[in-house]
Length: 236
Length: 294
Image (cartoon, rainbow over all chains, first blue to last red):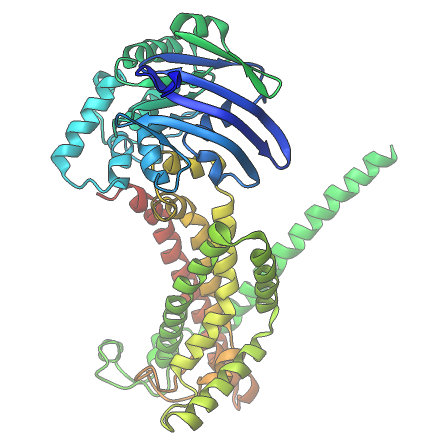
């Protein structure tokens, strides 16, 4: 067994190539990420950082004219698995490798329903279980105290920072093992950014976090490791 | 300087065009109201019969519009009921599943379908009825069912196009939200994309309702007649307001009869207005319901 399969490695990417509409975005990227750590992905915009994240949860497959080569292995439920293998159901993968987007994207439903939405997708019907898990992940996202009295309010009435923490809570509700965040604070003010940074630091005991970030200070503040993207490849 | 004048002229022309359009609408409505106002009364609708007893279907209406109103209402509802599932399913297929080549091909087909004159659709419905009559049962002829099927073909393109356009107009963020949370494509379509585009789809349905209510060419070939009373079943002939208006305006013998035609036109407009407002009401409520239901 090679070194990459050691206990501390969570994600192993090899020879990743990616193109959109014939334009190569990533070329020959090989990198691995340690378990229970925060890794910051930095680099100029348009260099393929978001694309890289989407290759981990196969979200790019829903984008027209995208093509990928290479292998991505993630240790899920204690076992390294090729996420592009036939035996890997893509919906299952996305439940274990959750993602938060740049712009908060709550669905036009109540706060509670938003967080419960992935449970509904997974077919969970037991109200007590749902209520319990919703509370747990809102607490993990440091949002519970702010919203516990208005879970039935429309999620869009929350502030931008609260909305983003709501999206993080929603991503956490299925208890994923990996959390991908694509510039989660770029549309937020300083206070909200600080709240999210604090929250991410607290989360790394439970899961492995990859965060794309433009902000150098942020990178220094929260990440255990920095991976820099440049000219369609990476400088580890 | 020259550009400024051109700009002024464009603005002026746009204003004039808007004004002419509005004037035409108001002239038409005003003319109808002035002409038909005098004939509007309960007896226009119910004739000699007592309104309450007629509504409870206890008394037959002979010289009123009640059967035609009922016929048009049933016809519109039936046609929409056929058209909605087929139209929405096709729109969903085009927007979410079809590959680029299939899409291009079907696009042409649906453009052709929406360009077919309604009299041709009527003729098709008529031939269909004749075919059924000859090959299956001589009890089947032009009837409510055939009319509604033919009409639903006429309005399918509206529903297909609006469904497709509103689904395709959903931004990528929202499109990927549920997918990134582990939703299957079907879950994404039914739980996020459709609720999100309901309002657009309802606009298509509203257009379709209007078209079904006013179309005369299709129904005169497929089962509408001048006098037959209330529609008795899917397989019976029926009366309808637009056909009545057409019939009376081409065959009237006294000025009074023509007045009845104007009255019928006003009632048809009212009926459309009522159907439209119901559809608008549903549109407002439905989106909310789709996302917030327990």
